[in-house]
Image 1 (cartoon, rainbow, N blue to C red):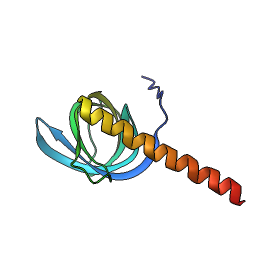
Image 2 (cartoon, rainbow, N blue to C red):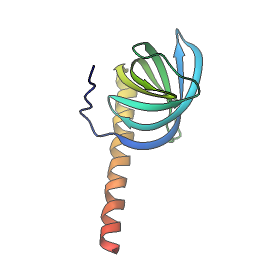
Image 3 (tube, one colour):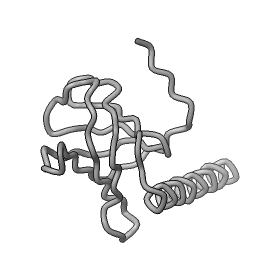
Length: 117
């Protein structure tokens, strides 16, 4: 099954915890993030096509951002791609804000690099 990614994903490095039925089953490092999903380097291979909940430990000084329901779209060794299916409104706003701020910072950094060279 071909998986199409419609939104730009922001390269990040921050921690995530994944849970099944609210029991922590492992943790990993988020390597990219969009409002609709993320890629996580996991501490153990995960099964594809499963539903799971996530806690994203974003570097924005707040408590972990809860993703109530995510679907594991693909796996490749210890990497897994997650699609966010259910995120409460407050968490969703925070996720969008975080990504927007980082995207703007990244854009400005690229512009500054171009001006310097």
